[in-house]
Amino acid sequence: MKLNTFSAALALAALTALTPAHAALTNDPGAIAGPTQSVDFEAFDGLLTTGPVLVAPTLLFTGSPGSELGAFIADLGDNGLWGAGNKFAATDLVGELRFTFSEGLLSQGFGALVNHLALPSEAFSVVITAFGASNELLESHTVSVSTGADSLNAGLFLGIVRSVADIQSVSFNGTGVVVDDLMFTTAVPEPGTYALLLAGLAAVGFVARRRRSDSQQPGRQP
View 1 (cartoon, rainbow, N blue to C red):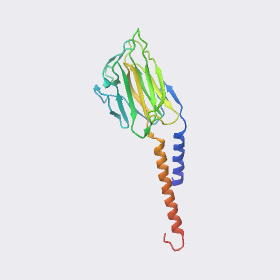
View 2: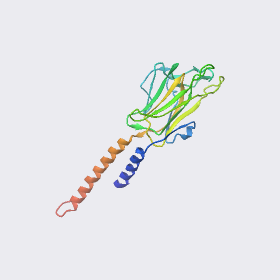
View 3: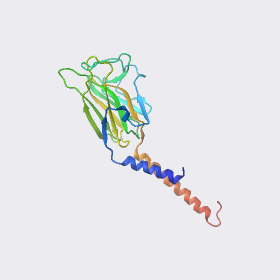
View 4: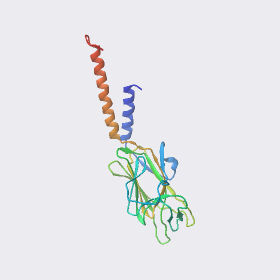
């Protein structure tokens, strides 16, 4: 690809990344656009931690005190049980699980299989929230999950999909929250990185043109 064509393609990508984004809550894992990556927490073994812990090559976990990676069992009351050979991430009785992309990287979509504690006398829910590059709130949704007292490893897929890649981190908050099978669009450099790259390409193009012009002047060697 010629330099000017490559520069135009990068400029289009940068302008697209700067376009205002609109978020949407989805219950369909297929709505997370590819290429995608996933995390199933099977590599962890009951690790009690607040993080940061790398759970994927570009994804860091942080959580409230009592958070667990690779949890084995969780009693969710009227929402059944999680465990029985399936590992997952879990909060303490009340808490937050947050997943943050490496600095300078942003994703377009993020979701997971989610459930929470449910009791007959209490109305509990889980809050999924997406944050931007400056930790600003992008979108937040409160959802109550109901899977039945006899269910095992059941839950509801909760995901946020944006029109452009602007998600820096996603958190799950609530009472007795459990999360598994993270799925996310592979993160890409944020718009500022594209701008720097475009500036560098412009400088390279200027130098190349200057050299061609100088070499074409009479008396100059190519």
